[in-house]
Image (cartoon, rainbow, N blue to C red):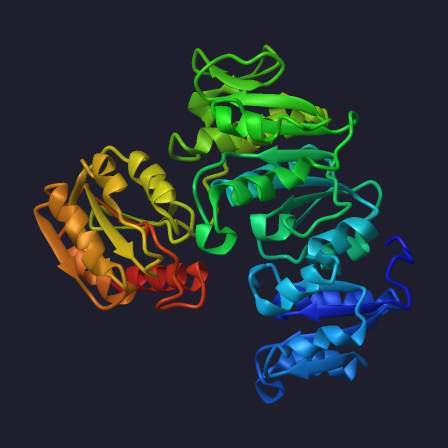
Length: 449
């Protein structure tokens, strides 16, 4: 770990805990900052805060008192989930206090080179796939970030000959100052998270922050099929490596004549790839491009592509029961992700969908529901999804209380050869703490049929 002095004897407020806040507070304490942690949850119900208190870190729990910022803090490190319209964050910005996220700390202390991966969809699959390919190719990768392993924790033990593959959300990227990965990847940009960012421009700008500090010695891998993405990152100084699923691109990765190519070199046959769905071609091309920049052999790349079947909760095959194949796509928290999942199958499908109501409609799903014979809805958006299903002409539409009850209902209304797909098109927070919890409940219900 680099022994930086940027935070030494500086007053730093860590706002919000969870895994990233705990890691940030502990790291700042090691870097000899004067750390104060502020978390909404009361201390008595907050084991994370209690642990930090035992480390000698000042902890304030139960609320976010605005007067905290009168204590002369020189930095605020916030949990990515706390939006910038939070009163305490707004006051910090007004006072000119830098507001960071823990991924900035990870970059500052890491001895290892970083590969940053962001985008509206495909981040986790790309991150995991690239990690597996680099590992197969002897590159000593580490995996971290929004994927579940806190970057600032991994960075503390990362070595110079290792590479950190880091999944990054727009929430994290809004709070960077110096962060600059050697290779940055933007899988795609669509409309998402407007409840957090306020407008599409801010969301895309946050994603583009991944390249704002890159130099001519760095690389930016981007989706050449999206003109708006190409324009959004037009300011970059990095060498652009394009990828495309629709055309041959100069100096990049693409699909041609049933093969996967990078810079005119055929890497391998597309028929050898086991990862399902046309949408995953983008993720594969991203990973191939990054791997080839590090000199990974075609044999290592194709070895992984021949066995990598996907990531849990992302169009994950769960089990076949009496000829019905069950897939868990709980990570589909927007309609775009659900469209991709639906388009991955050409067989009759039972769709399980519903969740948090963010105010949007679902009629953009209608062209993608052609194979859906039965729609089972749950959660706050059940009525909206029912209306969309009726417009799409779906014959059987059922409403149930939750995912657990949706599974047997789906089975009862299915036939041999059908796909039963959980792809909610909504966030989980109306009924479940996380999309992972929702997916795990689905998996358990399938196994108890």
